[in-house]
Length: 147
Image 1: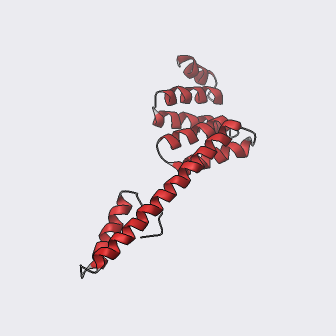
Image 2: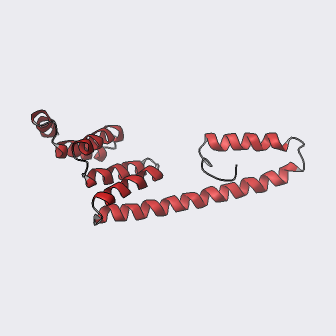
């Protein structure tokens, strides 16, 4: 990795050096550092579709599917024939669809439980508020229409 840093010292605008440093950091799951260097590579070459794709991989690895999808789409906007980005986008969209289905099932279960409880408790609206706040704070239903 020392040679990549040396390349940057010789030519601070050399995007492949930033990209390769990011790849090394990614391999060791040092995602914060990797993100920084992928962004630097893109700063120096806005058409660096591999860097966009790899940013998508990092965001998918940390569970941020929407952000991952956005970066895969950026990679494909630059290079529509980039097969790796196409495959990664398909996987991320599938995972996102599964997540939405799971969220909908949780939402449905909450509605069912609330309807069962509401006849026994006079302050059901308070229960609904507490469940809603708890679900949002744990990001279970952050984008769900149920609460």
